[in-house]
Image 1 (tube, rainbow, N blue to C red):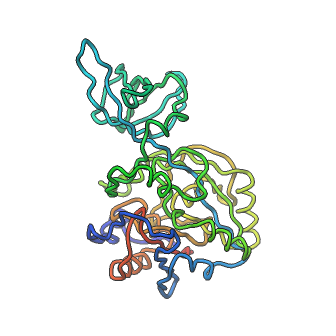
Image 2: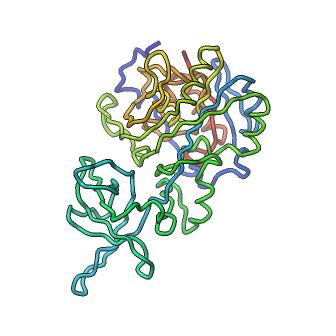
Image 3: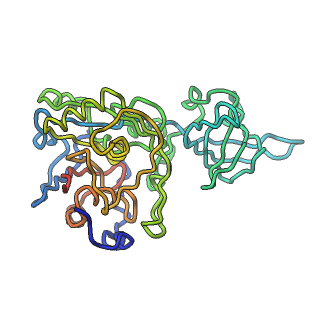
Length: 359
């Protein structure tokens, strides 16, 4: 059922004020000791994430986003010319691009300060083997296209740091975050932000769920830097950033079989929802890969997942609109009011919610 309100008023309807101290700076330890708010059609329950098995049943299908965060934040320098130059440049790699006109090993990236095409960069510390890149193009959103001499991915662990969200004050503890800012099931390298709903799972919890007959499947959506970008204009004019996704034949078959048999599909995270809805052809989930710019707002329906595990999101964000589309505006407003009064922690390292599809 569609919402009858003006879609451009939805941000005002859902807006809330969030005190800075409610933004989680560290994750719960163990991971599944975070709070879990279970939001049903008629009530709200306050649980611990390790209680999740109480709310699932044999035959349910959990679908995860198994994308792994790359060490995408790199310090670079301009080459020295006649003893001059060498200034530092911060590089945030976004994703590898297919741009035959520029050749192989092309990445989009944000540079601070930005550089025009034709400039050469040296990535890595001066005393180590530096890696060269050339700025070969400029995209509409201000990102630059960098051409490397070879595949840079095997070298990122040595020269890069994890690109933590801007609201986390991480200091210099990159080694700690390299483990904590990844899901325990992370696989395919490609994200510049973690699919954070999955950060609550532990290997032991996954085993418990499997033991009670909950099936598990995975998709891939490489999360882009645009996930942190707020909506600054009319919702109807907002353009989502493109993200690469893939759904395997085995996962598509598992989801379609569960739907046909009346079993529940549970999406772990908003990125999983966006992937499944991008692969939905109106009747089934189709296997395949591509780019998606799907923007899910309360005016739209979410067709595939029956339940959603998600974190507590930023005001005025596309993620907040997605969960409102999934559960309904009234339920989300009530849930966020309960979270604010109930001491819940927000954002990437914060607490979790279990939502039912409003359809």
